Length: 114
Image 1 (spheres, rainbow, N blue to C red):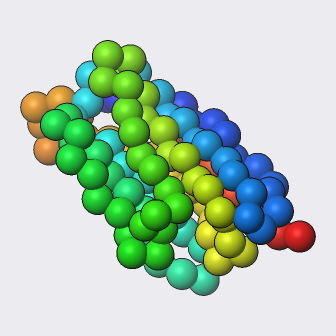
Image 2 (image 1 turned 90 degrees about the vertical axis):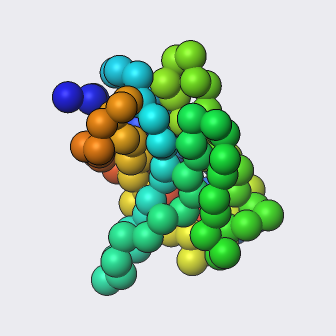
């Protein structure tokens, strides 16, 4: 079992910045951030592998950066130039090291509004 602790959400004005963090209680392989807006399906925002290969949703490319501290099992999502359409609950997702099972964080609310 892997426990995840997320932090960093909040209310920010359009054009503002936020950084989310997610700390895992054990060694993990792939790490990712998803988000779910009201009335919409959960979608992948960004992911990073143990080899630091990164993927981004088209809607966040150039604005968001995912990075990880491999030694501490922490993944970050740096979000710049935030837009109202980025408003959602953001969830951390990780895959246990050497296994196929994945784990979700509790979610952290990001609201972009004037």
